[in-house]
Image (cartoon, rainbow, N blue to C red; front, side):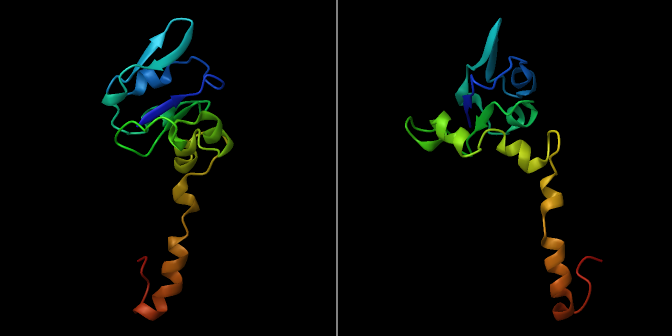
Length: 122
């Protein structure tokens, strides 16, 4: 569920407003977008994926995080590198590699193949 729009990092591009399939955000003329309908968030991560400056944090929960938890502590999330985490996983953004290219399961399958009767990747 969307929890934070970082006022420090947000550049007011309104990409999150544009891409949200459930209309969770409202654009604010001359200001940062706001989370207007958090309960409508489907935790699809589209807003975080499209944010060009990693200013959003979507918690991996299906309901709002209770105040005072890690998921609502902007400073801690920033220190832990959690802003833009989903974009890093999928490899979106300059200089990033898609997570699928970081997956080493193919190497494991090659190592296991002789013990399991052949090429597991064929």
